Structures are given as structure tokens and as C-alpha cells.
Image (cartoon, rainbow, N blue to C red; front, top):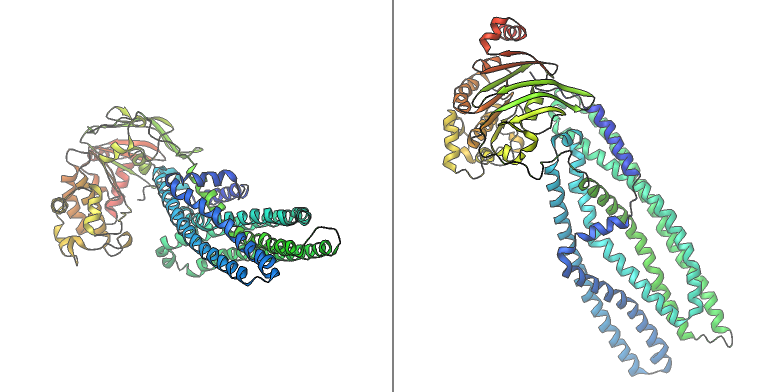
Length: 605
């Protein structure tokens, strides 16, 4: 029997579509997003402030190089002063050297600051992720979670390290160049101001288009990552049902879709930059005509030296426009990543422990369901008015067909979910009032899908109690009577289990999970289909160990094989979320009801 039927794929697809619609309505460039990102720089205020100083210095240095060249041409060269030219060249060389020194430290500080911000941001996202309840993970695709922690965070890194400070340098350069142009020739500068609205209009139109195609590209990338993660996790099912070609076809469609959006981004960007550059050249041509007229016009007051300086500064003014336009693509991507990260961080858990939550240490182990009704989706309850009591030290067996509500009861006891109606009581306290951390420290869970972390056998057993010594780990396995199975591994308890335990047999993985639970020494023990994947010989050894594991503990057993619940103190038979029979094994057999029918069907098989 499978504890709980899934069947949530269609609602999940609908929900993803809704999330994408929400994302499409958000602004990709937002002052509040930038402000929130800058809040992550507060712990590094000294580093950030020095970086701002270097940005200002470099913004002044670049136009200063141009001003030096113009001053040498208009001064010593025009006068034929060789010594003045030599001094000017030496000054230019020193200034050029200083720009490289400043550039080195600006880049160095920017990279360090960006890395620090991303490190803190990634830790905050992961911490928030760990606080989300099981219901959130049930509704959210793994690929979307991975995308937040990888591509979105990396996009923010580029935005902080590169785009932000490069753009500030270029903007500062434009401001200094504009002031110099105003000093050289105010009349020509008025023409530049008159042309500014044209540049603003072009930027606005292309930025709006870039916003749309970039958001679409990021959403398509998220779909590709989600599908890839799902395909890797379900590769056994894919190969078992010969779905390789069909899955490859679906993936090709997603990749083609993503490529189409990427191409749209590149086309838009490829049109935007040349158009900007063309406009810059046109503006220079207009300034040449007007400037030449002013120089040639008697009494205008314009000099050739001033014109030379002005045009040098005009180049310093217009060249950053193309650079800023080139940075805009990355800026949009960084904003989209920040937008998604903060959207996730702003998503509160559906429920949390109250501030004054009780820390019960130790638990006695009394569990009571008082008229509990529960639903994963509000309109489809899976438990209806369920009531029962488990006294300390009792073993409660849960029996029923797939989807009858067995695993839902387990989820409520473990406080993975909260009931909509009724109360779940632990030691006569409402579970809502108890600290989830203190409860889980005194609870052991062995699931049907025995999950192992990458690491050694000993490390996976020690998950139940991280402070346990090697001797305590070995003793836990010895008490299970399975020490010989682990001694036979290539490196014993130091054997690497591989990703999800792929290097071990199903029975060995189950035994590790049993040893993990035994080492934790919990007051409440949950075995959810814990022996369904174990062969008969291994199950016999497990049955012997269960007597030790269950002693003096309140235990809830969801069993695939009815033989594992014969000695239970109470058997609860569920059907469509309701308890239809309860009692000991012998009593239910004599009653000749649903349980007896299930038992006869099992023994006949």
C-alpha cells in the first residue's frame, strides 16, 4: 500500500502559470529593489564607502585625461613651447598611471563587496527556505527552488560587482564631461541639452522592449531547469516506461522556446546599441556644423582651442551612453533575479510556532486526535472528524487503502501540517502551542522512501544525533542485529553511500534509516511504510529489532505488510479519511470486517 496518493500535477501546472503571470506584471527596474540590495552592503559599510570614493575619483580622472590633452594642444603646442609639451606629457602619463591604480582597487573592492553580498543573500534565502512548511514544498517545483539559489543569485552577483559600479563610473564621467563642456562653450552645450530628450525617448522605448523579452526569457529558463530536475529525479520511471523519446521531445520544445526568447533579447539589444551609436555620431556632426560656424563667425567669441576641448569632452560625454546601454541587458537580468529572490523572501510561511511556544523536554509520549479534520487543498478534506488516543508506550497501527489518510495522520503528528479543525494533542498540549524544534528532537521518523544524504554510512546514521560517537553508532546497528551487513561493506561504516544511497541495496538503506531512528532515542516513533521495500530475510531481522526499537516509545506504524502490526496495541482502519474500525489484531479478525478482509487477502497472496 502506498500511504498517500499524489495526483497534484495539474494544479501545480496551473499554479506555475499563475506565478509567471504575477512576475510578468512586476517592474524589472525598481528603486526599491536596488535599495533592498544596498541594505545588504551595510555590514560592509567601510568597504562600500571606499568603493564609492574610488568611483568618484575615477569618474573625474577619465575626463581629466581628455582635459590634459586639450590643454596641451591649446597651450604649449599652439605656442610652440617644447618644454611645456614635455611637462604636459609627463603630467598625462602620471595621471594615466593613477587611473590604472584606481581602476585596480575599484574592481577589487567591487568584486569583494559583490561576493559578500551574494554570500549573505544566499544564506538568507536558504535559511528562509528551511522555514517553509511542507505544504509550500508540495506546491513548488524543485527546479524553481534551484533556479532561485543558482541563476538568480548569480545574476544579482553580476549586478552588484559589475553593472552597478561600472554604470556609476560612466554616469559620473558624463556629469564631469558635461560641466567641462559647459565651461568650454555654453552655446554648444545648449544643443546637447536639446538633443537629450531624443536619447531619453530611444532609451525608454528599447528598455521597455528589453524588459518584456528578458522577463519572458527568465521564465522560460525556469521551466527548463524545473523540467531537467524532474527528469533526473524520475529517470527510473522514464526508462521503465520507455519515455525517453517523449521526454526528449518535450524538453526540446522547452529549449527551443527558451532559445527563441534568448534570440529576441539579442536582437533587441543588437538593434539598440547600434542605434545609440548612430545617434551619437549624428549629434557630433551637428555640433561640428554649429561649432565650426561659431569659430568662423567674427565676433562670436569662440576659439579653436575651446572647440577642440569641447569636442574632446563631447566624446567623453557620448561614449558612456553606449557602455551604459550595453550594461542595461545585465542590469535587467540582475533586477529580474533580485525581484524573484525578494519575492521569495517576502513569502511568509503559512504558519510558524507562536513566540511563546512551549519546549517540552522530555515528552511523555501521549498523543490524542480530537475531532480532527484536515485538507491539503481547502475544498478537498482528506481527514474527517478523526479521534483516537495513543497512550505513552503504545504502538498504533494505521491500515487502509491508498489515499485513506494514513500519511496525513503522520504528517499532523509530526507537525508538518496543521489541522483546519479539531486538535492534535501531545502530552495534553495542543500541538500548535508546542515548539516544532523541541518536538522533532524527540521524534524519530522512518519513511517508505528512505532518503540518504551524500556521505558515509556512519554520517547518515549520525543524522539522528550529530553528537553521537563512533561507538554509539556501531552499538545502534548492533542492537538492530545487522552489524554483519555493514561490516561486509567495502569500507565498513566509512563506505560512501552515493547520491541518495545509490551504492547500497534497498535493504541496507532501510537499515541505515532504522539505525538513525534508534540512535536518536525518540519518545515518539513513526514508521511510515518502513518495511515495504525490504526482502523477507531482512524483514525477519528487522522484526526482531523492532521489539527493541518500539519498547517504551509511543509508535505509529503505517504498514505495507500486515505481519508488522499483529502486536500493535491498537489498529486503526481508515477509509476515505475516516476511522471505520479500531481495536487489536485478534479482535478485528473476530469482527470479520474490513480489516479481516484485508488480512485474508494478504495471507492468500
